Amino acid sequence: MDDGFGGFIVLDGVEKVFDVRRRTGFLKRERRRVRAVDGLSFTVAPGEMVGYIGPNGAGKSTTIKMLTGILTPSGGRVRVAGIDPSRERTRLAHRIGVVFGQRTTLWWDLPLIDSYRLAHRMYRIPDARYRENLDRCVELLGLGALLDVPVRQLSLGQRMRGDIAAALLHDPEVLYLDEPTIGLDVVSKARVREFLRELNAERGTTVLLTTHDLQDIEQLCSRVMVIDHGRLMYDGPVAGLHEAGESERTLVVDLERELPPIDAPAPARVVRVEGPRQWLAFPASEPAAGLVARIAAAYPLVDLSVREPDIETVIARMYEDRASA
Ligand SMILES: Nc1ncnc2c1ncn2[C@@H]1O[C@H](COP(=O)(O)OP(=O)(O)OP(=O)(O)O)[C@@H](O)[C@H]1O
Image (cartoon, rainbow, N blue to C red; front, side):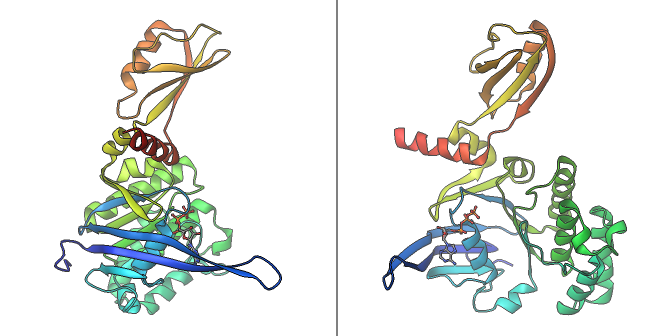
């Protein structure tokens, strides 16, 4: 639903200030105001899948909490599906799903299926709809063999898939994901990403994704927002983020023997040599294939891998660029 302001999720000049009291002596207390979100405005259209990233303490969780109605903004206006989250938290709960990678909403000592049965009753999901959604999640997330296993016995990847299913049984139109791939192995990450891609494509679910893993964003989102000190620093395509931060990937090359630094075509260049291993930096916006082919043709190559830039580095470089502009 559009609320007349051109978005499904709308933030307009939103602020959140925390009053923090700190003990500084026997009877002394110091009051400090933390401006966690500082005049934040953005809109997300229905069906968009948007990355929401920033360094630690940037204000991401505070934003998500205001979007779910857990926290009330100190100023400005928030609307999700036309609903003011802090005023109508319960009504909104039927329209949104939330997954926190670091916490589970599942019942720890009970078999996985019991948490789903509870959600069925709590959200008053019609029986046929519940069955259909459960079957779909079980199939796509590979939960079949896990339904009767107590949650505490699940691996992190299994638990995360279980949590994602729990957030989707009531057919939410919006899904907030906070670090959904944190701590997962490569296979589990790929499975979670594939599922989210399908969910977004087939159901048109609007997704707001918070993560420290740049690959989550690159593989899932066409748009990314960067927040720092509670303010929006960047809002645009993922490729533009690399350009804005001039971020670089690293090609790690293992040669048969120790050799002088590889003669790489600019702007790629060797940044480190350790015995037969060499590290080459190259622009993240360019594919690695050409560089790899050139090196493979001219050098005795044993192995290679590509390392992605991390979000903190990309954002740090954005700052450097702005400071020197
Ligand atoms: N309940 C609270 N009381 C006081 N200060 C808070 C509270 N919640 C958050 N803050 C402060 O607000 C700022 C933003 O925190 P927030 O948790 O939103 O950041 P974040 O971007 O989610 O960080 P991270 O990536 O570490 O989770 C931080 O300075 C944090 O210490």
